[in-house]
Amino acid sequence: MPLSQILPADSAWELVAEGYEFTDGLTTDAEGNLYFSDVKGGNAVYRVGTDGKVSEFIPDAPGISGLKWGADGRLYACVAKEQRVVVFGKDKSLVELAKEVRPNDLVVTRDGNLYFSMTPTSEIRRIDPQGVMSVVSSGVVGKPNGIALSRDQGTLAVSDHGGKFTWVFRIEPDGTLSRPGNYMTLVTPVETPEVSKGDGMTTDIHGRYYVTSAEGLQIFDPTGRLCGVLPPPDPALPLVSCCFAGPEHAWLHVANGGKIWRRKTSTQGALSFEEPKPYEAPPK
Image (cartoon, rainbow, N blue to C red; front, side, top):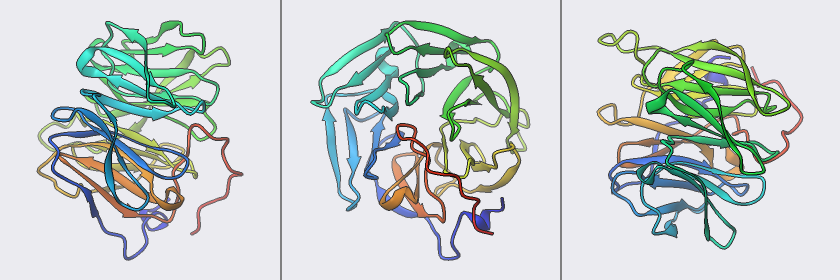
């Protein structure tokens, strides 16, 4: 799956939003609106409409490092600053799901299982639909960071900020994780050949994985082979989150320092809260 299958010939980075300190937590809804946080300097969940207009979506919500919409129409969040996992209802009211944790990023399956990474403790935790939290992986991924679901939600992928692999786990019918494997090998900087700084992740409808890292946005096919690396819009600033949003979820967005950028693609993002569309092989 070469990059020519993903990027049209005229595709280039376009600035979406700026003026923030450290953007993060990119996610989208069914309409293609983009949501993000300013984890260091902001106090809200921000929204970029499909018309390109930026606004505050949820005020008084500082320190969020991860965001995901659930199939129940609620917005789930890792509040790293306050060491808790929360969910915002349709009326934007807040409910605490876990406290005294060290959450970084999260995903929510269609059947209501929430998985989140705990970078400082080398853990992946699960909150089941009844609200019970458990440790589903400990010590396998050194510094688990970004987290994403495969298209069929049978696989959980987790990037390692302190290593050079992105790991995958099988999601068992009871929600536990099994069969860990260092599935994707990231390109690493010359000065740190064993450390990729793997960070935020997303997937598309063709099963590709997109992983932000020190070297740029790294793209892998469903078998874990590298398709290519997209340099960040501003190489001097950290690239920490990515998401498909916009019309038809065909615009690839990245959080790059204090700015949000996007570029047109020939694919579409996989929406974790919807049943996947029938699989179609990507155009050659």
